[in-house]
Amino acid sequence: MDKKTKKKIQTLNQRIQKLRGQWAGARQQMDDPGELKGLEDQLAKAEAELAKLKDG
Image 1 (tube, rainbow, N blue to C red):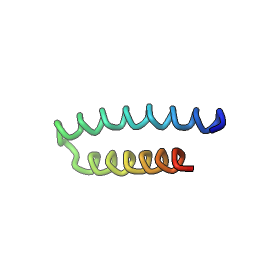
Image 2 (image 1 turned 30 degrees about the vertical axis):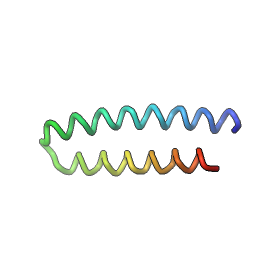
Image 3 (image 1 turned 180 degrees about the vertical axis):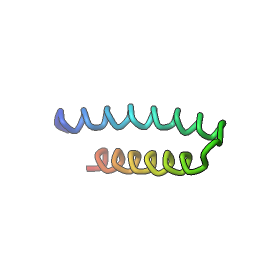
Image 4 (image 1 turned 45 degrees about the vertical axis):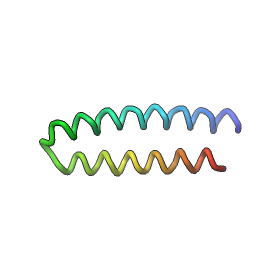
């Protein structure tokens, strides 16, 4: 892996960690169900991109 890919993976891992924290908080509060769905979508997208980078 080149430096650019490693940096992208590191950034995605940080983003996923942040999104998981936001998702947990939104799940406890449940003020806006749409927010929870949006966070789940962002999290799935980030995880898919991370898997893609790690695979190839």
